[in-house]
Length: 393
Ligand code: TTP
Figure 1 (cartoon, rainbow, N blue to C red):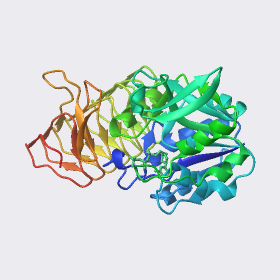
Figure 2 (figure 1 turned 120 degrees about the vertical axis):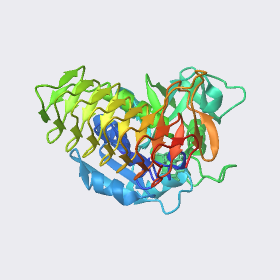
Figure 3 (figure 1 turned 30 degrees about the horizontal axis):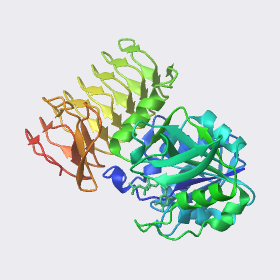
Figure 4 (figure 1 turned 120 degrees about the horizontal axis):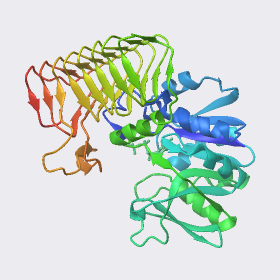
């Protein structure tokens, strides 16, 4: 079966991280987010991957190329991001026979994708506590009988997890009318398939929709926890590594460094001397973590430098950020309330008691900057030496 992976979206809720790097290419452990989806499809036996690209699509094409892990990859360009059904429609010329559709920004447990392919026609579902926030499936006698978006009275607690195995006929049903929010939605195609076929619900053990910056942190927590420790880089005898720590070839860990895994130190990165890395932390390619810096449960993207005597906790730093010496991130409120973050102009709860800052690419902080919890710094933003920053900029 061919697998269509949707990766054309603008990722507006992921800003500022998605401004120049498209969301599917943001780092999750040792691969871009969408590579985890593509891997799950390949492990389930996909004969070909059809990637739908659009926003910053060339970056996606450059990464996967014409063949990935021995499986052919073709590309469909969605000129305008007019919705998920429209995205699959763009891929339609590449399809014949039954086909799968997966969101390129969702993490699935791979075994379930295998079951999804076997059960075609089928839809992946996951049990959730708050079904009102999701597309919800109704079921009877082991089949899916309906799908409804964000219902006030959910028929079940089974949320649609954005992974489908469609019969060949569904190719003809992709031109659905626009929904109330003006998008052509794949769920309307799913509704038609449910009407005409016996559709199996395939229950996932684990699933994560990575739409907002703290979900990128959660995605890294998930996949870093699956690492098996490995030292291929240059690690000082005077460094102390415990738990599952990967130091890739070409990375350097200097004397006095303590790393408590899970942690991944990628090629070209330099850590120390005397730095402390803990929690689930990704130090991406060519990043530099200076003397006496503490990094906890964070993503430090490629080319970013954190200078001496700084603390970064529960945060995501974009590419080529420069953190001035003595910069401190606060990641906890005095009243212990969940930290909020600005998404498309609204402050929304991250559901996290501990959350630090999200810095877009090329942010620069002056020395001794203090950053308050839930702060959003746009790409290229700067702070002055000694400044306490309490509002997004
Ligand atoms: P969304 O997360 O709904 O859209 P998005 O990725 O653009 O993010 P945001 O809402 O923050 O702007 O999309 C779900 C998946 O479908 C995701 O993998 C992107 C993909 N997609 C397309 O390929 N084309 C589209 O037109 C849309 C809307 C989404």
